[in-house]
Every structure is written in structure tokens, then in C-alpha cells.
Length: 337
Image (cartoon, rainbow, N blue to C red; front, side, top):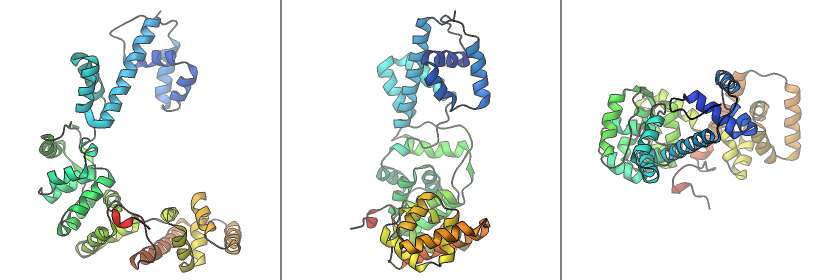
């Protein structure tokens, strides 16, 4: 019989938790584990003959408390979680839970900032060095970062976007120093590991969150500073699959302007959602013709598909630049009436 044991390992507790939750819940949890974890837990479970009801209750209560703590952390960081738990459980118990979580939990740098209002963050960072601003923005949610970037002086926007795109890994010492500037106003915890952030994907996400005017200003400036980088960003700003986000009128215009061969080749490997959206915005005869062509086409080269999709995206960008279609982005200018 398994009895209370303060020295019980985490693996033993996990096994007892699964036993306590029952086979159906345990089976659903197993689906989230890898083979090695399943094997270890199964061996541990197989060695348990009987469990005291008090032990079951204690382990379930411990699991529930830790789950709540993790939820509090996601809401407002470790500082917030600690405050809530102290009020509910007392200082010592709360500290023990936080210590247990932080021993294995990697809290991403600037976690506190992702809970803050963009205008607050802007007030804190607008006078910082561009590299410092770039680092902070690269850790924020894309929508937050886009709003902040749009609010910075135009002459600084392209430079900061370029710094985000070319950023690699940053040491914990540097991150710690930068976090300390904001720590006076908002609670935070520094993750003591090397963290990779930034890159072209990061700046694309940020630019997708800004208004069209800001995006154009930044890309035009980058075109002068670093043409290759500007072109790479443009390619990733809108991909062929994003056509599903456009309104019907815009899709119909795109279908008219694109070569049929490019559309057929692109649709050959597209998702059902993309096919459905495009077929709905064609005449019935055209849609049936496309479907027949796709069926008899046979295998296609990935490079040919990518080139066809790139030509379609180029047409979409041209139509947007001329104001003939609208691609929704962050900012009030994208409200369609």
C-alpha cells in the first residue's frame, strides 16, 4: 500500500495522479506524452498495488495548486502568481510552489511586458538605444510590437525593423540589464539561458501588425539600406495561402488578373480551404475547368508551384499598392466600411 511520503519522487506522484484520475482521463494524458515518458510512467503505475485515499487527495490537491500557479503565471507573471498564492495559501506554501515551478519552468524574457499596455511600454523605451528597442520588440506579441513600432518616429522605424531582422542570440546578462530598466515599474523574472529571437520571421510578424502607411515607410527605407533583406521581408509579408483572409470582391479581381496556369498550378497543392475560397469566386464553368485540369495534371515540381504562387502574390501586392484591394492589417486605417 502506498502511504504518505514526503520524499516521493515526481515520477511517483505523476503515476499516482494518473491512477487517481482514472483510465479515461489518463489515456487522454498519455496522448500528450512521448514514448519514453509513457514507458516510465507505465512501469511506475504497474508497481502500485493500492493507494490510500488520503494520498490520492493530497496528490490531486498538489497538482491542482500547481496548475493554478501556472495559470496565474500566464496571466501576470511569477510576481503576480506569488502574490495570489500567498493570499490563498500563506507565504511559505506559496514560495514552495513557486520554487518547484521555477526549477523547471523557463519563463521567457519580458514576460511581464506581454501583459502590459503597448502605450506604457512605448513610454519606457522610446528614448532607449535602437538595439535595445529592437530586442524588446522582438520578445513582444506581434500586435503589441506593431503598435509600438508604428508610434515610434518614422526615421527610427526602418532601422529598428532591420535590427530585429538581423538579430541572433542574446546573452542573459544583456537581457537582464535591459529588463532591469523596466523592472522598476513592472514585475519580471529573468530567464537565465541564452535565448534566440529576432530574425526575418519576427520582423514580418511585427510588420503584419502595423498599419499600411508604416509598413510602406519601413520597407521603402529598408529597400535603400538593405535591398535583399527588404525583398525577403516582402516575400513573407503575404503568402498565397493568405488569400483566404481577403474579401470576395478582392479575390474575384485577383482571379481576373492572374494567369490561369498559375492559379491551377497553385491550387493543385493548396489546402481545401484555399480551393473552396477561390472556386466560390469563379464562374461555375471556370471552377469545373480548373478541377478537370488539376485531375489530369499529374505530379508537379515544388519549385514550379512556388514560382506560380510568387507571381500571384506579386499581383496581389501590386493591386494593394494601387488601392484596388485591401489586405487587413493592424491599425485603424484598415477598418473597411
